[in-house]
Length: 250
Ligand code: 6PG
Image (cartoon, rainbow, N blue to C red; front, side, top):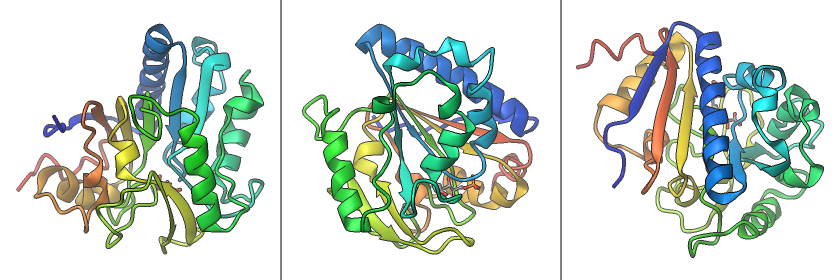
């Protein structure tokens, strides 16, 4: 049953939001390791998760995850070299992956130096290596997602095709001054996840959150609404600034 009543948790500020997200990360990992002996997480790019990534690189959080049995993926990636400041992989590597004892072979970056279509095909093959439940890809234990001011999530942008049957997609999109060519997971992968945690902070997201969380289903205009896991939990972790218009719901 798709989660029709999203679980919305509002925090005073981004620091408190990030600490709660770190606790949920640890809980998700503990449960996955107990049930399946491995923890599969898909990270997000953008600025909002940076505080969370920094927390995971230090105590008391770092030692609460068995990194040797964790596998890191990305929900989307910009088609730039891995050492480019705009690389979501490079951002996570610098911020926490280099500080935790995770085997290199457990970090599954998008081959962002390939042509976008080839990188998307390559990533679909990597996902296939972790396939389960009769799918061509894994059921992620935790997916971190952000939300753009335009309602996009990962690299699913307004106006992009809604019903896509492939697990990955090469897209070209223009958002703020970020790299345009990207590879993204698609809703069939996200919606197979066991837990999805959206992180959204700042007043600039407040209006869009009303459209996404409180108004009709309009997935072409608000792609974040396409994230409706079939058998999984969606948790919106938002700060008071981003929640500013939710309480005055229309
Ligand atoms: C990316 C992300 C993207 C991001 C949103 C929100 O690679 O940029 O996948 O979907 O989560 O654009 O970005 P902020 O957290 O910077 O607002």
